[in-house]
Image (cartoon, rainbow, N blue to C red):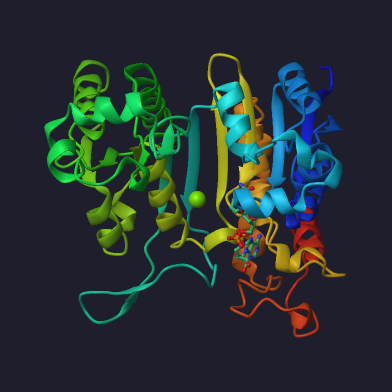
Length: 398
Ligand code: NAI
Ligand code: MG
């Protein structure tokens, strides 16, 4: 088989460190690939005025599969201040390159698994009926619509007159907002389309079917957000009835889901939601299995086969300059496993996951987060594993 080419996009801060370590793990697992570097992130904003240069888009278009570390994002004004002086005249506005990637390639399916590793000291525990301590085994996969909804970017402060006039045709807008001057009104839209709502629902049901999950839960708020959540719920019911009658469809509201999260997380299987609620639900569940050091994610477009695999965490700038990196590489390694699954290297993914599980359950090598230390440069002296030592331990198990 010819070698695969993977676009490696380290980005900023700890993204650079964890990506490098994940590639070492992939190498050790015998995955044969060539990695080409994709420029993305803060330096490219400051020096070129574009955090997502066209050459990176071209590379992904060509090679289809990307591994991504993390980027640093800053608010519009702060971003402008750091722009190189020569570019300041050009009316450039900073936009997050990861959102840009999603929109450019229509990476509409986002998948975030939350799986309890045995022996992880960060696992959620609760008090059982008999007063004893229980540690539920969480195995949830969140499917988040990744391109629409509240993160779709269709928003205004002081909206254009036509938009304002259109809003004024809605009786609720007239009654509840119409008394405020236009320039004191900000609007962020929540747009769902049937096409992309259908695709995320389909992906969720297919995943449940393929891997034998006992239910699919729609986590929205159809009783209040009647048009968008309501449409999604209606479509989910129809799809389940027509194509997946053997998989029960549950319906929870996002707020209640967050409240009940800790009550019975082991009862959930696949969860599907729109963009923002999927983001919230996945962070909530990730908290039960170890948090940012463990939370992985995949985003892809099933039509083009383009996929980008990344940890949920950001660039953690305060740890970026440590001489010895202390952050946990497992989230990035898990994301690399999702990439392997996506390209059909399932056995290799399984092999790596088993190695991670063995290291975690053995408990000899633990990064600072797993030891519940405050993240400081001296944690390695105090017995925490460095990023590299954790990757070494995983490699040793392979
Ligand atoms: P963050 O995820 O970078 O860090 C928050 C805290 O979580 C860290 O200070 C650290 O205590 C912990 N943490 C994160 N990753 C860890 C790991 N692998 N191991 C152990 N502990 C870990 O989020 P923050 O501080 O809110 O944002 C920093 C920058 O990252 C911002 O510029 C933000 O915009 C960006 N960001 C980028 C994301 C992406 O690239 N997809 C996602 C989230 C934030
Ligand atoms: Mg998030």
